[in-house]
Length: 423
Image 1 (tube, one colour):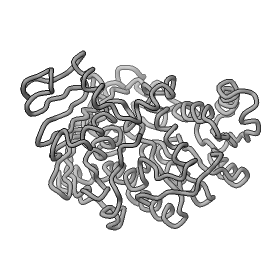
Image 2: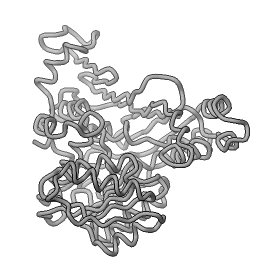
Image 3: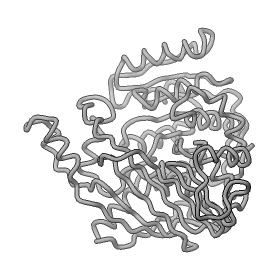
């Protein structure tokens, strides 16, 4: 499935499972694209379904998406939806534990599956997803939107053009203080995500930072692959202190035993010996960052803030690599190296989430399905990026002992072509 291309879909008929938060944006933008049809919406809550049906009508016009089936009120209504509506594709934006069974159920029903991050929370479930995708010949893509950010596409283009020489090292992260989600006590992300912080282990959300740098390095695609990982976490303190400060002693958040460390740091080693430092922290009071650093023999690109340093300097701006090109100086870099995909789709994606990256991702998913093209992110990449959670936890439990990555491709990564610079 590394370079798998499905048969063309002239009209993409889609069903959506989970429209409480992330799914809303996916549904709204999908429904605005040409030759798409929303056939069904499923959610636990009736108000989410009815609100989204109305929003689709407003966004796409009264003459489009005229036969949307609605399902709500039970954990398993999505199964009924798949059986009754037979969609071509299913978009899944639910709590993490449901990603794997829903993706597997979608593929077994004859649909391609597009799943929010992470693809699954255990390696056992990731293997089940691989086996199902291969046996059914259906796409299963984890929707890593960050790969479609302007700077991530810029860095990918510069790496492919050889600007950095041979790639050596990367740094990636998801550092995003999200304690306020604990206010969502009975419904919403915080209601189910908070227990993960207590009872999980290791890096619970690795893919936003890891996805882009893995594609810079062509990991799981012919050139190189994930080999092993070591991991350590700090003590778990922040969530417990936040709960004690903001909730009564008998509140359910104060009944949890917060064990997962506030900050996790992992080091990944690749087959070629390259390294990736990967961090996760959704608790500590600090500014948002994904690091997004890629270092080669001829220079380094870094994010948050975006910076460029090249051996011999950046032409017309700096004389050597001892000074970053950043701020207003970057306009010349964007002018020269902006990814052609960003140039083509930036205006079309405006109004979608996360600065437009969500729209570019959805546009590309539909474009690939309609034209019978391989997806920009394949099944196995989503598995490797998601596997960090379980591997980091095992390494922590074994005092930082190295953990070997499973080869979800069964050796076929060596025959999977690198992601091209798509125009």
